[in-house]
Length: 400
Ligand SMILES: *Cc1c(COP(=O)(O)O)cnc(C)c1O
Image 1: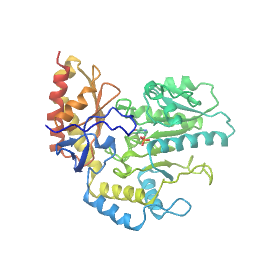
Image 2 (image 1 turned 90 degrees about the vertical axis):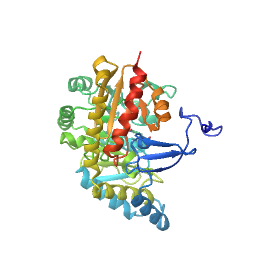
Image 3 (image 1 turned 135 degrees about the vertical axis):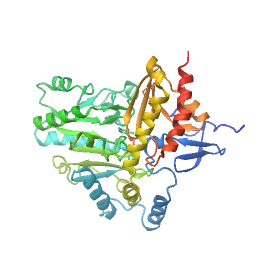
Image 4 (image 1 turned 90 degrees about the horizontal axis):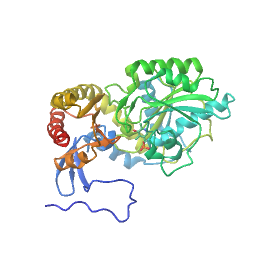
């Protein structure tokens, strides 16, 4: 029997890690240091868009390493312009700020919202945020997050947020009624960490209309649900709307740290030199990762693949878990494309280890939701393999 990876005495204890350490990967598979293979249905938490060791991405990054890794934003970075032009084309928005992570993209969005307010004379701007939202772990983004566990121990929280429930336009109107300080509405098109909870398409359209009516920014956090995962470049595009501000990260660089905040005309010119910045953001290596990720996604039709394989996976899960859905052990199977959640009737974090024992990587979020966010190169055969490993384990877990 191979020894489990030991707990590290030197790395800070911020994650309840499984006793596994990975060695290498190929496509949708990874191998641990003992040589055991795993089918990867987590994709580095919706990050590894192209899977592991994608030959074309690796070749491009190797070439980039020999040219430039980093220069600083004191100079123009040609690849920033290339990637920004591409994101503008895909989103229908106009300008991009690059950073390195999701929380930084969301910080930039919140700063845009506040300055948008200050620019029109609102001294204490407020942003509408949502129950069960997750926007990151900086002090501002954890304050915007709607999960007491993320906030516990880190008060005082940043002020200037109004919290509302999802998919309830009347609640949004009521919570903001007569409040002249509201400047923006901020949410994930599909909540990720909160349990794979989609915003309804008609709700997205209603919020867009309300933001227009009230002159608020519509800011949609697409850090997890964006970059092709649902079968469109950005999940809000299913509703046929445009946001004013759209933070991105996770899948944008296929594993290389990268973040971006994409803005439309209403928000694109709020920042002037000196208002915002970052040392690493937009460096040539990260930009090359973004450019190549999108190029390969387009060339290989990965949006269509995410839609097709995602629908296949969802239908397969529904079929395999039919009696659990009928008897209430499985409360709901939801999500879109390759962003799926299976909500169980009880907390199920134990399933992550049980799946890993059987060679499958998943995560459990919001205590009782099995989350599947694999690479967008997943095949139907691999989807069938996920179903074949996962569903019997869920059945066993739910059995009285
Ligand atoms: C992961 C995530 C973040 C935070 O991204 P980091 O790169 O971990 O800072 C923000 N918003 C959403 C929706 C996320 O899923």
